[in-house]
Image (cartoon, rainbow, N blue to C red; front, top):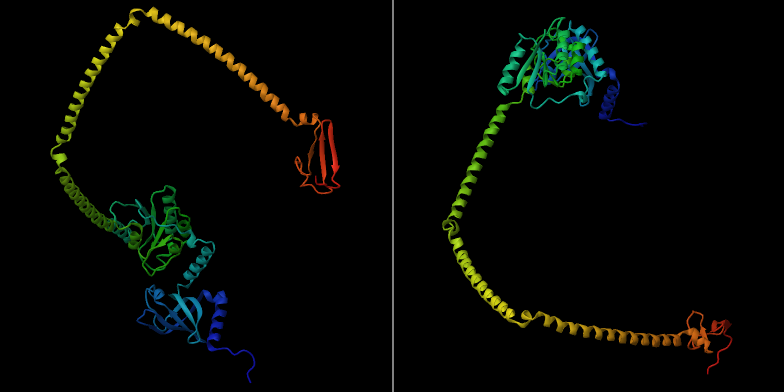
Length: 447
């Protein structure tokens, strides 16, 4: 009988994988041993063992890491491998996944390399958030490298081919030896202090680890990380990696590639411009032809072929109106002249004092008539006002009460003309000329 949980093979392998991942020691190991059973497959991946007198560990080096090897190891070579331990779940075996492989003797340099890498990484100098974008259209490309090396020649050649208008500004330095790191750092600081370029290439051609060691120097790496100008690191060949590559805003495998990253290829822009120019010329020509055809059609219209016809009808109409106006004016002048002559012969103009005296008498009569009419109207209005006043007095409720009558008000404040709406117990008010009597209905008697 089986007690407790039963694990599958896959679950066990996965649990072991998770245990290894939880231990940071296995994430970055340096292992020294003898190479045995080294095989490189067509895919580019390498499989081998590292062993010593007491044990053996299976190793895998994938294509990307293997391409950085200057020389493939052979069985029996003593090497130092840098990488991580992980579980290959399908076969249930743990393996050493190698990122870098070096012959024994370079171990001290690599130990210093790894220690500085971890230190600077912990400070955040390699963080992606610090990276600056490379400008799209730089006018000046700065280069910090040797004046005599192949790197500067390659950069000038590639940049000139891609865009001849871009200027190359060189700060010459030594690129290997003890004097190289301070010169390289000084060059980077100088370019930044005087703002001498839009993008800066820092690098050199290929070489051994010792030859490239200046670009692993802490001063150089910190100068690259602190640069305000975007920096492209171009150290060695594609298989070479330095700490400068991690601190730079962009890594190029070679100086030539760095020039390609820094300088846009204007030949494509020129080709595109030529195509657009041809399209524009064709569009303009087609539009001109269409507009010319349209203009020819317009010019064939009678209004443009015989423009004088536009005014013929209006000129004739203007002549007719002028003739009509002249005739009308002459007739009006004749009538007014005759009327003036008749008025001149009228007796009023001959004896105006008679006309004035006659109308003065008429005005005097009208004044008297108006005065009489005003007096009569005023008297009649005053009489009617008295009559209306008497009627108002007769209708005044107080006057009615003074004549001996009373006025009764029901519960709702309404004047009663009938007792039909009253009920026993209702309170009523009876108005007399000298006061008000409040009473309660105790009984109703019909008349």
